[in-house]
Image (tube, rainbow, N blue to C red; front, side, top):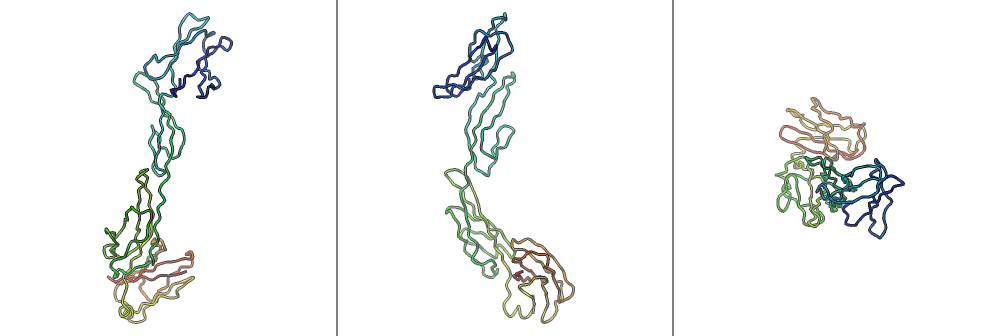
Length: 291
């Protein structure tokens, strides 16, 4: 009756005035009866067969009191399915998107009103473990030009992000700023993919002579409450912008001071590593700030 390959029992009971189904457990035992017809008088006989050609066994029965033969359509499970998907991939099933393992059901209906129930035993496949080491230093000068990829496992994946080439990272292509560099790997045995990400910070580095000519002073560092920005030599004639970023590269402050020394309040920020970018026209300088 349930299309699991084992013959079940359909039993009539005069005393109980019912017809019940006993599922075959597959080990020479049968489950307790499930009553599915109890609306007529004293059943005496029952026969099973696929009367509506939908792939499962229906029943025909008659009663001691009634002067008729009755038909009951099997609306049970018509189709058993087993499938799996990667942990990070929702699995479409009927009008559902499955995100956790389990047993699920979906009911279909033909134009003739005949129901078909699909039973899906769904499992999930673990993602491959992917790991990428951080860069040996957290900040690179754009003048460095080319740097190597960081270490990543498993082998056989690929890198993605700003400045990525076939064999290395071109800092000039990436340009200055904070960039996410990711490593992606697909397990060919399961088809499941995973990735890991690290950050690359690229700055324009001034020569000693250039820094001395600008005479920028950022103090104190480490700082607890305020950062002071000043110029030891000539004050800049053009617009100056000060931008503060946290360790993930998120911009948390932008200021355009009109006088120096200029003070930035960091008293409300959490302890940690920050980056201060000072823009003077086309020149930009970054400083690592520790709170």
